[in-house]
Length: 478
Image 1 (spheres, one colour):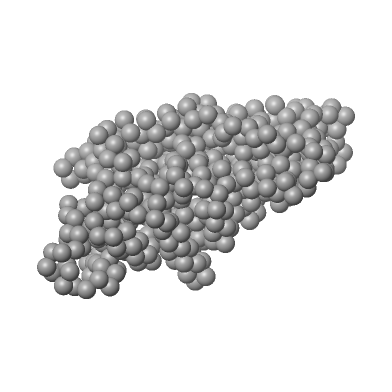
Image 2 (cartoon, helix red, strand yellow; image 1 turned 90 degrees about the horizontal axis):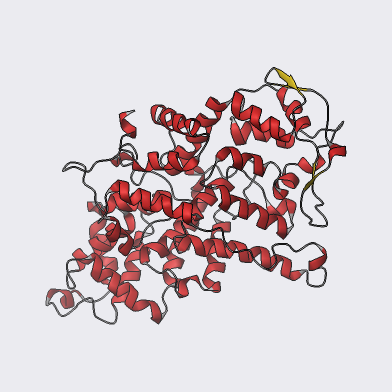
């Protein structure tokens, strides 16, 4: 359990920019240089508290004007239905780029409590689901599970809407146990599944009219059910109470394993997971204490976990803009965001439309012979789309801030690379990286000292270097 003790910097394990960036990468989508510099003025514990407190205090996104539209409201303008749906996704990507505290956690839970708008269609249900993710992403997991079980998007996606007395539909009941709380084949039997389905009967939603969910007692199976070997006339509420009472240990370990794999490393440390599970269970399934403990721990800041996770497409796209510091600016104008959304889709991460109920598998699944080439191309295109004259001084100022020199191409290259890769360039890459930075400018300009970072060509040189860095293996890691 010593691994969960707070990280205390020392001479051999310093609190440095790499560790600050590691925290920002895992809790969000990376940090700008100013955020890294501010983080270094705090202790690790203080910075974690600041970031977790910001998630807790972060308000739910403002409800759009179309949030309660019914199918009838779209009859006169059906094209707007698609535009409203895409606008929510665009806003979420903007939040990721701008470092909105809840953006990463909401993404995690969208890949746990999976739904797909391609199935339920209705924008009102899309908003209800997105609002629920933001409302509960760092709240109480027990409450979160109960609310998602009667969420309009989920009722349609996993056929809860078709789960009625005398004709129970087992789809949601199975995933509630298998994917959402216990894990496949863990602590339940196949006999439990239809009995759980019977307890969940009665919740209805008028999908094609796009109306709010409701409970209809006439569709509820009002007879005894036997679940986990216990018999009673379980209802929606008492079923959830039973699951979290009887299977608390299993739920806590399963959820903490998923949190560990998403926020730290693909292969869980069982001792650490067990320690986190004790916290989750001991706080009646409050998520914030678990995340504080993990992010503050000695274990979290071990060197072997830094740059040891593969970036998701959304992480790769949004982190580039964050490293550049291009937030709250023209980088989040609609044309750019539309392109980023398209890129994520092409790379296999269609926001709010995972491939199936198990979600995106992540990790090695993000990269194969097809997607790697596409990731290179898209990363380079992000750099070159951010090439307007308005960005030039931001590129230049970033390079100045990251280097101890304004005239030495090697030092400038190393400073930029370390910021974007969160590690030093490997020796075999340094000479090539410097040549990319020089960008064809004759060597004599560097030899006689006439070149400096204030040249008009410097922003182009920086972009040329970044184009090379995005093709290094290290850039695919976070």
